[in-house]
Image (cartoon, rainbow, N blue to C red; front, side):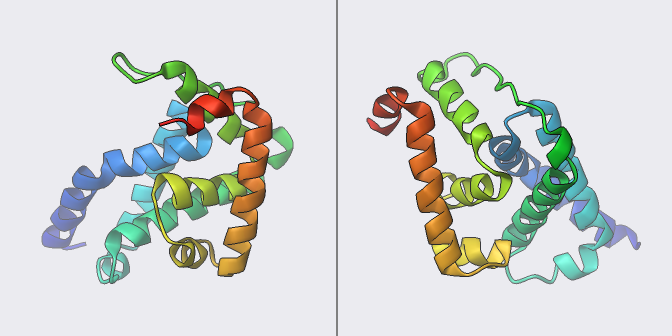
Length: 166
């Protein structure tokens, strides 16, 4: 790979690594797995950089690669899935008990539902954008998110009051 292309990728990876990590962490709820997902995604981007760098929206391309990597990993680990222990919120974080409860509740969702909720509500993406990234219909995103939110409310119970309050 020519040096200028490699340098272009390195600049992108440095600039977007934290953003990809945050999304990966929301998907899996585990720091080590999030780092692995981020690294795997960046490796895949590097391997396909010529095509990826020509994408209309490189960030969307990278997020799609991250989501697909996560879902692929989940499918292969379905039988041996472990419970994910959320890490404690960092110093100065607002209401860490709510954050921990929410991360634990997200970990209870099926991988695809979790991916849809994270993209739709945390990343604030449109239904159409989520559908395109996950290669499904917008109606599937709507119904899955609706069921996932109902499930989150069930899991959170009384904690849901605090999560929904501003």
